[in-house]
Image (tube, rainbow, N blue to C red; front, top):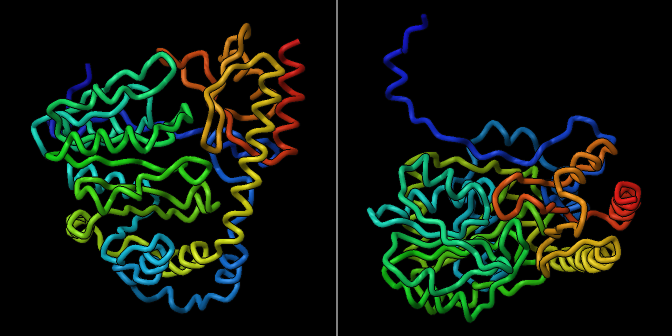
Length: 354
């Protein structure tokens, strides 16, 4: 008989977030974690090649000034309206800790980024998940009730659906006593940002990332934009936990990526073009899908179960994302890769669907 260790009674127990599989084999086509298939800006490469490694003995600038100023200039904001963190997950975590402190529940969709309920659990935040409509859209009426905060992605993950700026404003305007967070990890791939509303509503926080559109998932840079009061509150929490969160090299690389607007737009154009091509090919193969405004497609086949397709693709060393969950158990989330990677996917699907 094993004894229960008394110290375990005081352990904070949570069900952790499950990230997309990271295969160790390099000889695979990886379309499961929404990484950008193209390299970062050449200006980032130049920073890496010329960086003085001797500087690594020094603590980084806790204010990340060079990066914050570059982001502020790009979006025509004051530096005091920008918060940076180690990936948007870090930024979102700090935002949860900072703003969701009411006894009232936080609201987010039932089909959404699966880290939200994890943060709510680990920080002991009550929450309610509002069901998306049958076509995976948000019903704004569901968010017009007492709450301790609101968060949802736009475009949504994993569906890729974009909600209109008018609908977002309706929710923000209808909740003046709560902070509304719009998670825009995929906004650069064709959706309209809520950034235009932050000067109008002091309770709106917009969060973006370098991981997707700027090809820097491995460097971990995320940022929030909002009014100066919101950003100060977030920095107060951040500096109470860990002031030195971002390396000097990361700050420099991020700043150069932001400044290279031409390369940024060129890469986005490639991904959007391949995405629209991929929609046509998937349709020809018998798939249906939402009108994605992201760098992935959320697809369901008319006759072949998603789980079987997922397994068959994995055997062919092609990785996509699959959740065996209610409402989405017959869908695959397919990252948009290069044209060559997508053609390899379609050839594999043709074989599987015979």
